Image (cartoon, rainbow, N blue to C red; front, side):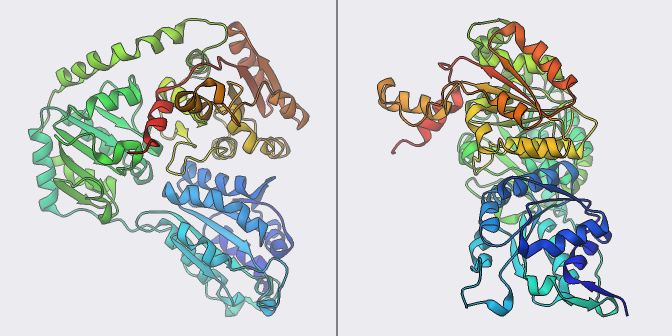
Length: 555
């Protein structure tokens, strides 16, 4: 009878049942048999320099491909190093599968190498956590992991695989292999709620639609477009929903970004919220007390969370919108859209001026505009940083789904995500330009992954908005305590581009406005992972910093 190692069975199931062709990992003795199995079954291993980056890459790969990314780490510190990436995926509701080694079962409670209660550590930041004790049940547990990751509100899952499960052989004819766990079963709202939602939208004079990551996960672009254009709804798509409709759509508010949203929400008489949570980034839903609310969410517990809804549609966003659209009356709300623009555009006059005006030192708004003009709306942009995230989210534009992802702007506020996310984007879309815009502080957290990029020939271009500090923290200290009490937030001028060159990439150091575009051109033409290190004005802060500082003050 044919036999197979447990570790090889992991790889066989991933490749042949779930269609996994790429795994993000860092090697270790506890998981060597899985590595060998991936070699046997032709799974590409993107081996990283730190497990945190592997988890972040798996999260991003899930976003860009629409299927759960897979991260593989060894026991003990390999596992604990991945936790930040898992927490980030959990708070952002991204399906990913973390596979981890652990101490051999036979040695538990004896003081074995890297023996620790990993499952209980990770449970609070996963949808499901399990452990396989029997090599014959490996496909069953893997199937369960994938099903848990994609069902309902998605999220990360964890499966622990001991070496004395991976390193033993079992007969193939004793193994039951289930169908793919990635099949999704979507719910649709009830008809009465659909009709109530349509009536509210049809009656509104000043409606506003805000969409979030649920829009991206649901793949509801066509249904959303039909609703917005039929009802004439001004809209903003945020988080991983951005780009489902182009930023430059006539009804989009992205010419004003967050300023437009803060202007529109207190004036709207109806908020249509699609796949987005009322967290601190939306001020817990308290900025539109005057408005009625129609809310679409896959999780029924979200419908009235932080702000009660007048109509709640529980189910998949795409199915909900498909049911809703036939009841929507065609309306022309151009006057409402123009009214909003007339109110918020004057508040952006300084930014608009800075975009077109060269300065010394370089203003970050100007840097973002030069990047946008060079790379265009077809590129994939990843953004990482504090003030940098604000400037880039406001200044960049995209014409396609997942075209702009501010990887550090989720609920965890996790810096250092940019390089891993950009690498995953390039792996998912090898023929498209991928531009990472990050702060100098956030670059340093996973900068060694440029070695990963060079070894695996992943040519991303990273542009550093280098204000020589942890800018958001520095400016917050200045606001709270005065400039003479700034501490622990200055970084100085660091030649990160030299580090990238040393790791096998291409480096550019830019201090003048006229150098920006030529440096970008050389970076892309190099065909290598590239870093364009741009020294920008260290005195510039963003409205995001002011809001952040205000949010932390004692009430």
